[in-house]
Image (cartoon, rainbow, N blue to C red; front, side, top):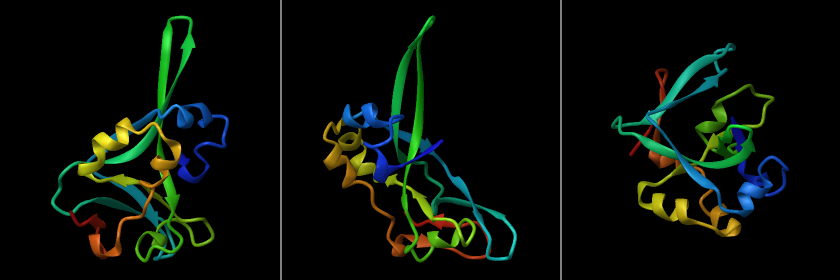
Length: 142
């Protein structure tokens, strides 16, 4: 599930976790987004150009149940309406969203961040210079 980073501290589902700094990293080798430029949904894979794993910003929460705790997480997304490449994803009438990719150098800082306002500074779009694309799957340039 995804969560809008701009509303992290507002929605009841995530408010406590955001305020408590329950941040996580979601490791992956790629993710898929639908591109509608051909008039129909084409599933595009987005990954690092060199194939290395990366991580996106997430938020986690726990709740008590009879048999112990249950944990869940959501990936954080930001608006991508103005991003030259990511705005191409999803239907033209939909708001464009992008996962928040955390730089390897920032992993420890992100995970240890307990200040919600400082955490917001990590919610940035990848630069267009870091991306490459074409008729085949899109990749992030590492």
